[in-house]
Length: 70
Image (cartoon, rainbow, N blue to C red; front, side, top):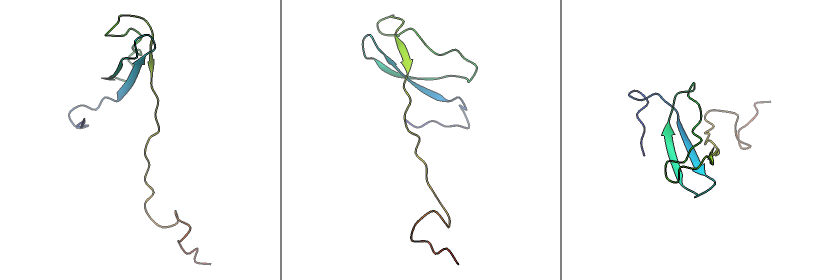
């Protein structure tokens, strides 16, 4: 799934229902309340799923093989 941030600058949140296990994503404003009711089973058992964010180190000084210049 590709999200065009120029057209839709809202963050995407990943949710999972503790009752039925349904996984889904929603694009919401930072000001919106979190979703709590599952769209599949209608139970109030939905929680946000947090995951690691990939990072990339670029430039000089991030690797052991870089020379310190001392």
